[in-house]
Length: 507
Image (cartoon, rainbow, N blue to C red; front, side):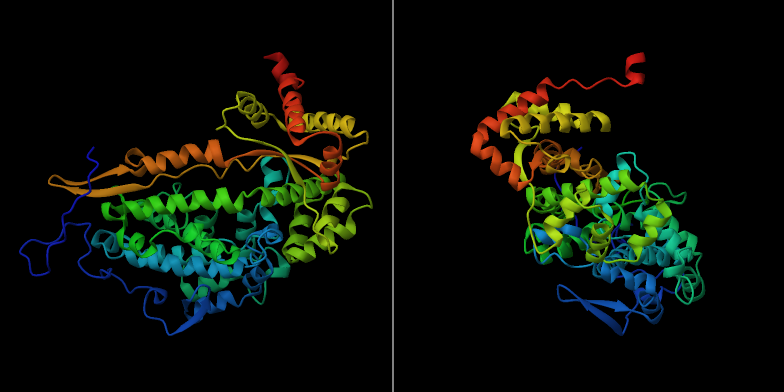
């Protein structure tokens, strides 16, 4: 597989030979049907950061004005991250408009290719646009903290499932005068279930190649969703990490893969694609998984776990309450319901009653350190099941309690492991010309940059941390040095032997 990029340029319009099939002859190749009005020149628009006008048609505006969509104005994009980055108070509403705008640009870029314009249907294009606009419709405050509990075996609402239910009008408080599904059916002329399928199903699971292609605009290695949140989160957090790639170049090089069922890039877009992947890596490393952000996330997750264990709320009731409240109102609702002295009350009071007392690091573990003890400790924690994980936390609390000569509450010492569903680098095909025709390779096969990022995401970015309440950390410092604490905790972790489950005993 050659590693050099093709320097072949498209033939001029008056050349005897037509350009290759994948080379756009015009800005947009006219499909055998009228383009959806959202992909044509639109007079109306709405302004969003940073200096972007999102074109709006009347029928799109009707969806945006629906109570179910307006609710997204109350839901912060990054949840409690504003406790660390004060500017990060932007919303799912703003993000949804941004993804819709970028999906328009992605689709227009793909329509430059005759084979795409001839194979896609009007329904494919409209479904992709509406999927981009409505992909976060079911998001509720702190969804990722609660969904982390879902991944750990608890029955909590998934925002993707709620999106479909809201669209159908199955949640009365968000039904409005008529469900969004009716607007889609009447104003756009397509089956709303097609939009729901695009939002809730894997982009690779659709039967038709054309539908998989437009689904990849919303979910792939370089999709419109990631492109918007990387830039938008960077703007509001006050960092540059998510903006350091050439979006114009990426869009210019966007193309279908050889199978016509996934977005890819031409060879000239390889560097832009590498930088896109690198931007996502640095945003997780320096922003999303910053140690203080992970501290407040761990506190939120434990507070919600306490509610779930104490009240065992009905999933339907919980979803209804969460969809009715903003971030701050939901925290206040949790705090009002929590018994005095409960983990929920103690944790939320530390950043909801005019205070900001976040947990502090006692120990940080990763897979890329010279200390073999730390690597072994990381692997041991990473592979524990939920019951063993909680048993290890209890053991560490007992050790810390013995050091400071006072009891340590369950919520005052937490082990944090970042989500396991965010560290996969999705493959992107790079398409190039040869005398024999089009060929492609996977970006990670030829790019040392992407290979390194895939490794570093697991070994470097994904850290395990032991956090303690500020009072506990301060008490420890009166009795032991930080190094002694770290070494003592390591000894506990390495000596820990989880009790085997009945199934493990049988094996």
